[in-house]
Image (cartoon, rainbow, N blue to C red):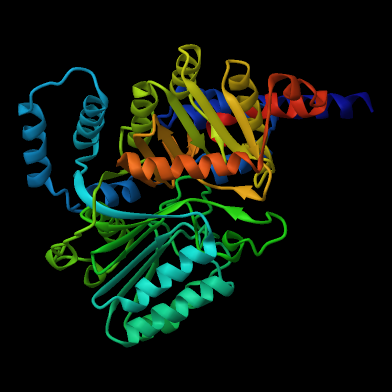
Amino acid sequence: MDLTWEIIRWVLLGIIIINELAAIFTVFREKRDIAATWAWLLVLTLIPVVGFIIYAFLGRKPTHRRLDRIKSQTRLKLKEAVDRQRKQFRNMPKPRFSIAQVYRRTIMLFQSIDESFLSRHNQVDIFTNGDQLFAQMFDDIAAAKKSIHVEFYTIYNDQIGNQLRTLLEQKAAEGVEVRVLYDSWGSMGVKPSFYANLRDLGGYATPFLMTRSNIFDFRINYRDHRKIVVLDGKIGYVGGFNVGDQYLGRVPKFGPWRDTHLRVVGGAVFGMQRQFIGDWNASVKKDASRIIHYHPYFPEIKVPNGNTAMQTVASGPDGELEKIKMGYLRLINAAQDHIWIQTPYLIPDDSILDALRVAAHSGIDVRIMIPCKPDHPFVYRATQYYARALANEGVTIYTYQRGFLHAKTIMIDGRMASVGSANLDFRSFKLNFEINAFIYDHRITDQLEQIFVNDIRNSRVMTPARFNEQSRWLQFKQYFSRLLSPIL
């Protein structure tokens, strides 16, 4: 008996040693930031064997071959126009510090890191309700004459998903070019055969970058989280809504769905079109399916009533720079009066966290609104941890009570704003492919801020005292989830 237990003890010790060595080798063989490295070491060492199963889903990066497919694809950079804009900004007399100076520096940042074209004359409409958004979007799709480009993280096989598919099939039958790009994990349960009739009618549909089956490619990280619709190269949609019944408030678990999406008419659509073409060409396998001749997709656009200046900025793990995060930092650091943020996931890295702390301690009115309920337990507990930490630094924290808050918006001083797909978390900064619109217009920013004010009426202020009333067990889950925040 003693010999048996001795053998078991040595076997267990051997497993632990092998597990530790394998954990070190697995984590350090790929380049990642130090916070993510330690978080994965924690998972792999504290949960032997099972930790490696979790790593298979959450930790593996896309293959270099796949990332190279994105980097090597010809992107329409609008380089000539961007270079011309850069020269104009450099030659302009430098004004004294003003909001114009803030515009200038933010614009130059995106021109430098993303070759993002500044479009000065756009017409922008804001949607916060899914029924109204999809009614307008479907009207625009029905009116499209030449091309329909659709890219979403999620397109479900449900009522609204089938309505979209049927409409796209009708347009393909009319001879309109229809291309659909979807994320295979975000659209889990939707088989390629869902688009079989669309393909038979001359349309195209393909999953983003990954293989066609999650059975053979079960990475949860590094997903296409972008939401882009471009119609005839003239009308564009970008924001937080996906295509699914839950985004119209039809799923009891989430209740009413509160999100923010933009409809854009004008030159800013070029940035969305450029990104779609790059993503599409990187994802399709056959040369015949790629978009080769770009000119027809960038028509001349005249918008008599367009007066909104904006840039579209994309980021993802295919680049070294965290472009949208850098944009968030630029906006936060430029604030002189107030910073209002809505995000479903508040898991900032140290740079964003410190910027918000500095702003709050500098007398700037910093307000952050998060959901009152989770859709991902660990993510929500980490969000609560950081909300508590920021509340203790003087940031006003609201929890939205009327359903699920999914909007990703930042408003600065009533002058500048950002709306898009990127949350205020590690995943959006480092792991996912995202796109945001950065807006330089006090009228649109004022509308977004009025929406924020209206949402306050359906929210609860979470003071430090209220956070302290939470149970010890809940606080423990928040602290533990915070340790995993770099990989959530």
